[in-house]
Image (cartoon, helix red, strand yellow):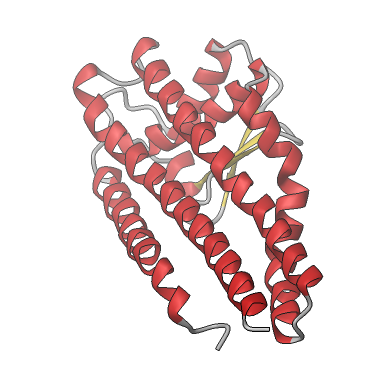
Length: 229
């Protein structure tokens, strides 16, 4: 069967890592969400302070619902923070807010990997939606062209994930440096902040590993289908 065959074993390590990463980021965030930052500042305060210190005056900071739903929108130049981060005065809140500011700074300075990621978002989104249906139809009807097209489309999603890794790690590195340099946190508070951002980064590693293994699986399935003719 296409959805369950011997190639599924390739996905097991990625699935295990994804489960661990999600558990790790949730537990780490919850742990340091209860540890107040000595500065007494909220995530929103820190975000606006970092943007101001970085000379960025055209990015707004807004609150939104959800948990760990924080992101920076480069098209609208808006930094969206979940309520736990926006109103929170914890080390977890400050770390996440600073990380998203890292993306705003990347955008402001023209960080190339971020620009590349933004450019391929439409292609990657279309590819992730259409790759498997096209591949499955090609696999079912022995249509090499459809299988190849599905693989190529999914490759765009894999490239997106690969580019995302340096973007996220760079944003976290910028966040840690800025928090300490401008006095938003004390040196003794760096460990917890790094723990929160490190756990979050692991989820991107897991997603990338899953995408790469899925692509390898498609290639193996396509090759096996052609060889059975």
